[in-house]
Length: 37
Image (tube, rainbow, N blue to C red):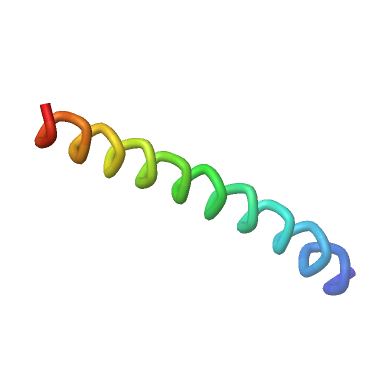
């Protein structure tokens, strides 16, 4: 029973980190583009 959540969790956290990374990247790119305008 304790093995199932461990398998399901990493994929979810990877998804969360990927989304977070993309959002930070987008914000950083937008700020860089705005400052260079």
